[in-house]
Image (cartoon, rainbow, N blue to C red; front, side, top):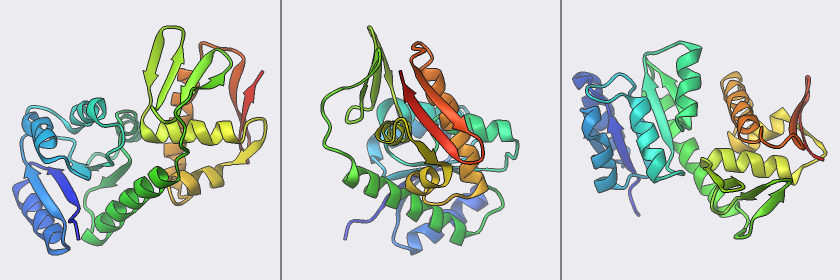
Length: 231
């Protein structure tokens, strides 16, 4: 059976050793990199199934590494592992393309569960994704869920995998109110407070992407969820 490949970027020597050995004891194949400046090259060489990134790193921080990775691969799961606790850091992390965010200190059991959940979600979303190769017209925009692009005129925006899945879910339920809990359970696997805050970030991002066309609107239905309107 193929071992899951993890790129782990962490500069705390003692923690890095413990986490790497613990993951390897659970049959993960782990490549440890301690210099943020070299992380992207390790990513290209190793082709990991999932990335675990510290934020405070020498030469290049985790936010910049995640952004570099997303320019190459829109789908590989990225988990931030960090001591930062500010909401602004969490929001920035998700805007850079993170799938999950674990605060230090943490237990190995929590890390394993989050790795498994991220990989399972990616597998199920990919398997269940529609065989859609044609553009979907959204008023003046064209949305291609297969290519994960949103285009208006000559401007093309490359969406992250989860941005694309969220927009597809809203489109499939257009003109109807879709419950926040349904979105959270479909896209994140649970409706926890943490995931709920993450959904808020993604809704804000999609609204920003669609702002050029007033005929499109993601309406918040207070206490329930959202309604995607195409006039």
